[in-house]
Amino acid sequence: MPRINEPLSTEFALLGFLRQQPMYGYEIHQQLSEATGLGLVWRLKQSQLYALLTKLEREGFVSTTIEYQEARPPRKMFELTEAGRQAFRDWVQRPVGQGRKLRLDFMAKLYFARFEGPEVAARLIEQQRLVCRDWLRQQEAETEAVRYSQPYDWLVHKFRLGQIEAMLTWLDTCQEALSVVVI
Image 1 (cartoon, rainbow, N blue to C red):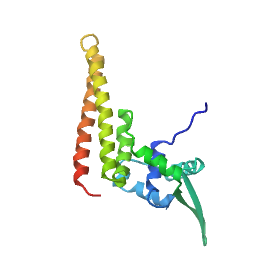
Image 2 (image 1 turned 60 degrees about the horizontal axis):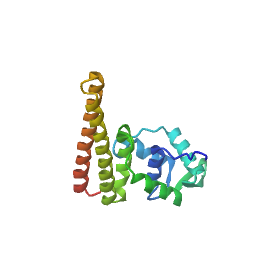
Image 3 (image 1 turned 120 degrees about the horizontal axis):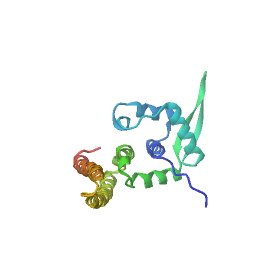
Image 4 (image 1 turned 120 degrees about the vertical axis):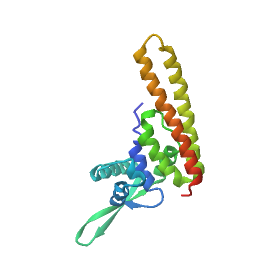
């Protein structure tokens, strides 16, 4: 069976920009270049952005309309297809499966989940909290298993425990902040 190439989180984030209205690639790049919002998390060169948008078009997640301009090159307007809308909705509601993906992937999901509604953001946070608690239980068992026999390994596991505990604390902060802030 052939492997299905799922879009990367960066690609899903690009779909998120198009969820409300069609946009030019340049407009998306401008938003990502701002020192607020998703610009605090993601950095993407304009050439990378256009390559990803072309890939999304090829895979049927976006469609384009060419707009011709006088004395300027034509430009493309990007719009989500129904497949792109569904892929975005599925992505934005799914927690990340690895701790290292919390900083970029989860933050992008949380950024867009807020615009989908407070219940979507709250559900995403709660699902991520459940995943983190599973990681914590697994890490606690692994830490205890090496406590006296492998001191260095025990220290590494203790470090990981601290990271997961910090993630859970941060998710609590997310829940508190987003339950108060109206977007």
